[in-house]
Image 1 (cartoon, rainbow, N blue to C red):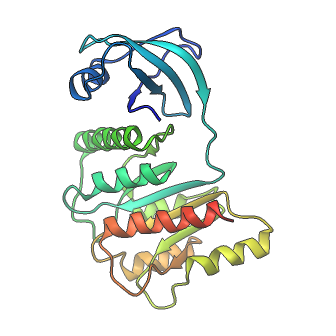
Image 2: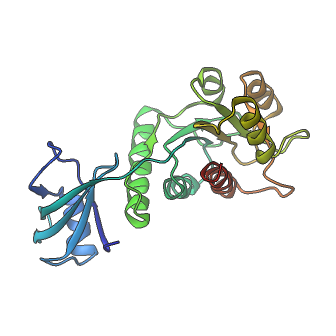
Length: 251
């Protein structure tokens, strides 16, 4: 895979040239030090890639000549991560890891134990920051699909309205939580197929409250154990997505 990747959403599907935005131009030319003649892969975040050649290395308006277009095959499954907001910069790391693992959607949630809360303007700025983190991760790992990052919303409301999933899972420290393998095997036995759309809920520091866990179960979520150790929320998110992705790939 070529070393240089940039994001670009051209107005046509078959462009002969691609004009990069100032930010993408600066990152490609000034930060990554691409030079005229270098191969660059431009992607639109929806699976389309243009294998291109850098023909103008202006730091605010780089130009690529398209050699050919290719369409990446999406994953056979779709994972949504519902993540209760953690303290500090941990959400940035979670977004990056979720992008690397191939999550289709990330929904930031305010739970009862969430210690950070955003008003409208601050929420919009945070979403833009997380989108930038996802883009950075997609460039680094070669993922041609960018996850959708939803608006910050209350965990309780999200639990009540989550529809259209084959499976809804919630990471749980509470007694009685099942293993992921057992829940997937049960679904496979009853449906004669693997799940295609799965929702994972991951709690904040201190986990979801007993009331939230009860609401989740009432709303159709399966409590899943992530093992005997208490994981930090960013570790739990990466672990949960990884094991689920592995199982779905091999089902």
